[in-house]
Image (cartoon, rainbow, N blue to C red):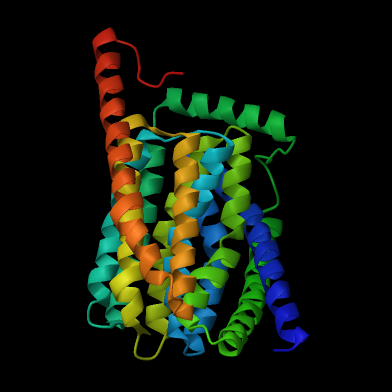
Length: 378
């Protein structure tokens, strides 16, 4: 492997970030005129914008016949979004979870993850499957916008005050009046840069996989997935630091939904014969993606917040997941011992700890209802 491959890979990752930044700025300015809420913007515009690198990489990989990278990038990004990025964001600042996320978006994320797994059981996510997923993303976006427009005037006033406070903290103001042509230009420029960056990154990833003897699925699940998730890292961490915590969590949940519905749907439609599903992804990575999505619901529902220690726990699990992939790919002798420790000690202890969190959270809810105070008002 020559230095050109590494240079192209790094430049590709840089272009992905720059393209996503342009796309998010242009799309956010257009969305501001529609009058939707910050949470909905996080679930739609920001989520789509930060998922644009996954769209570019997955589409390029699918068209090049690299289904392992296409699928691995989507699945790996969804796992990284929750375990790594949500974990880092919560470790920086404990996050507050919106009731809408608990009632609607997280259950949808779980349901769509299970749906994709069922579609993959025959070894291929075909054209018709892709059509179903694309129909789902249209319905989901319509539902979010409709729900936002039905919000009360009081909610809109509260969110306007939050927006003003965020603008004061960041020093960045998104104007209510702007040039629509300029915003569309930003969106188009972002898409062009993303496509170019995605092509370079896929080429570099394939070469890296060939030289080191690592499967393209593992490369897609780790290196490419982490690289295309960088916009989510920047957006969610900065949003949590600036106090816009709804957008931090909404960005990640929405990004996961768009990854599965839109990006995987497009890849299945444009790829001749559909996206092939490797046995390793079917037996391990897709179930891990479902398990990660399911793990969010009890934590979110019980306490409507993610504490620092829960964030660090998520990050620890992402490190363990990546270590398992590397050990498995290299056929390392310690793989059996590592799996045993995780299966017989770490995971059971985590389940017990999460159960305690849920019980405590439900107890807090009951006490708050009895006292007449809103839970988690602090």
